[in-house]
Length: 198
Image (cartoon, rainbow, N blue to C red; front, side):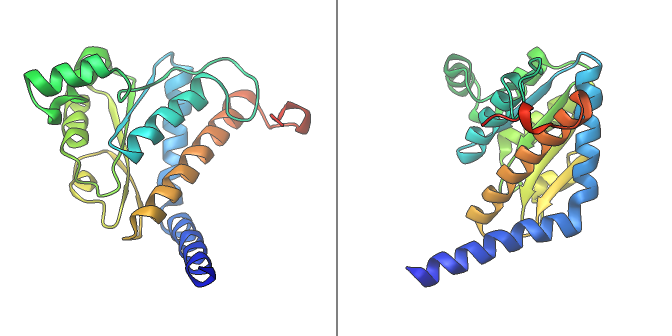
């Protein structure tokens, strides 16, 4: 058990360090996009499947409620949460359309769609990106490995250069937390210790 734990810890740290080394400029671009989106009164839409669906909901909650400081709610919505929409679209059309139809209904120019896909090959995230682009919604994705098909579809691609799903997902969560932190810093100023949630 000790060997597995130490190896997993080392690999997880390496995935984050590799992302930071190779892709941090893309991350800084995403921070800029989200800050400008919120300043303009637009919204961030998020989508993904399985663990990535949980990430989408987690990130939306951090923006709408708070991350580390108490501040005004920020407009983020997870497209993974309305079971009536998800099941009706899946039943009447296709599971591949569950996010795209929501983007078509809710998205407008100036918004951002952030798709999360460990493989980069999730058909419903790919269709959501296509729908967003048709509306003039900016598109960014979090992926792993070589970025999959989404690497050629989204405007901004943040790829964790690892082939281990757990470590890709762990790095995605770190990226999502850092996105919240840096957006808060840009919009609300540097965090003081007394402002930080205990």
